[in-house]
Amino acid sequence: MQPGSDEEQWREDCAPRRVLELFATKWTSMILHTLHARHGGLARTGVLHRSLPGISKKMLIQTLRELEASGLVERHVHDTVPPAVDYGLSPLGKLMVQPIELIYEWARVNAAALDSLQPRRTSRRR
Image 1 (cartoon, helix red, strand yellow):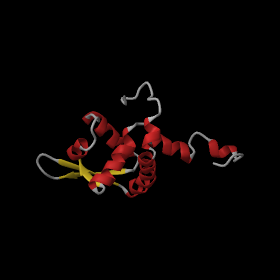
Image 2: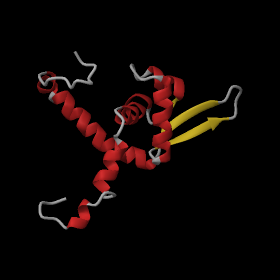
Image 3: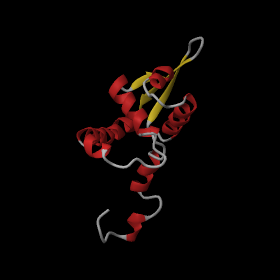
Image 4: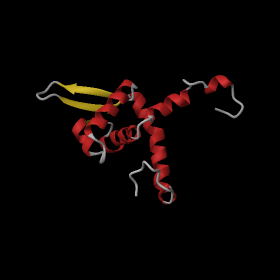
């Protein structure tokens, strides 16, 4: 949105607000990044859980369900006993990973500046 843009572009359901809703939880980008960078776009639930230190199983499943409902991941159930479930990036999820990777690379390059910031009160960073 450009300065002085039409008021219609700032409505509550505009595209920038919808994309930011996808990042309402802190785990959304981490899950998408981990699926892409560590698992080639597809991983079983347990493998994904072990790849994300600090996330509870409940939060992982909840976020995966939200990502599935948003069309960013696809759930694949295998007909085995017990049933195995894979989560993979959808075509839209693969597109969403591109800006996430740019942000993560920016964070790596600017790690020293980020380290000097005061942690938020809710941060686990010390």
